[in-house]
Image 1 (spheres, helix red, strand yellow):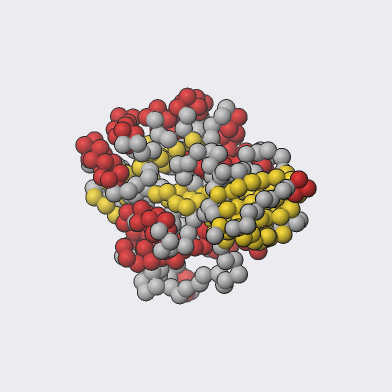
Image 2 (cartoon, helix red, strand yellow; image 1 turned 90 degrees about the horizontal axis):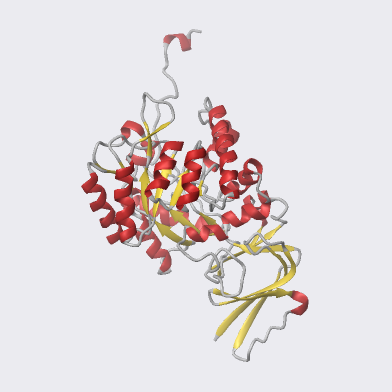
Length: 445
């Protein structure tokens, strides 16, 4: 027997950027949306073999579930690279990921991309979600990020070759090609490249791949019908990534005119992921984070956002990502903050920002724009119902208390359960003797 759900008389944001449809009915059957129509004209022919659950959403907003295009579900919310790389085994990391991924659903996230993962765990978690073994949103996954010996964001913690945590260090062009093929073989939906890295005696992140090296990975992946992602924290890396044919560029920090032109020509999408920087700059002091570079972070957001607004106006697809998975971006709390930054810093309207977090996110899930991330007949039944009007104020999407219903694959998520909590695992966190040296002068000022 088929089961239908009727969301009756809500205000519908369809995810395309179109105006809000007031007083509309949305009908779900199985994992698809059957119809969307004004309540006053809806004529549901429900057939004698159908049962219908009617949910009155009068005064509430119905919209697509959020798609987080940059979420590190296997990282486990470390407060440092030391914790990320050295404080858990692969089995423990998988248990933590399975525990944490349910939080995304309960925050209104119905799809996400995990571009790189520790211990190459992502594809197995994705398959467990698809098989119904683990409760979580739709997921696409990469495996270890590909790095050169110059490293990534963890500086000298990254080995000169081999694998550690989320990193797989490439020794030469042949290894780049071979590893790309292996990752596709073992289930990667995306291949991620760390195009920039932190070098201790240099400011910012340097470009640590050549154009030829980037093309070796991109061409190999594309030959195997697999898209690529690049972490780019400067204009040069963004330019090279676009020239190499990278499909999704993360950050695009300090993108300049030349890089912007290359991105527009290449058709690459961008997920700026401002949320981590914004959280650190705005709220880091509340949790004891080092805040001596706050002005630098604010400057990066402002400079990059101005150029990305030009990119948006030129037709570049912008995606919303939270970089959830660190202590400054814990799971279930900040997945919607990127919309707030898009409105405040890029000057997008709330409906435009919502499209970046819903319809545009179909790209991260490797699905057509009209098949997911939208409220339309035939689209995936990934829907949230929220108290408030996100078309006027996107910050309401950050408040889980406002969520009334979440549907993923047409199945309603139980929002009435207590929020998942746990105790720390043995050895999970740094055991610090002190936060500063106990000198004689400290005792005798």
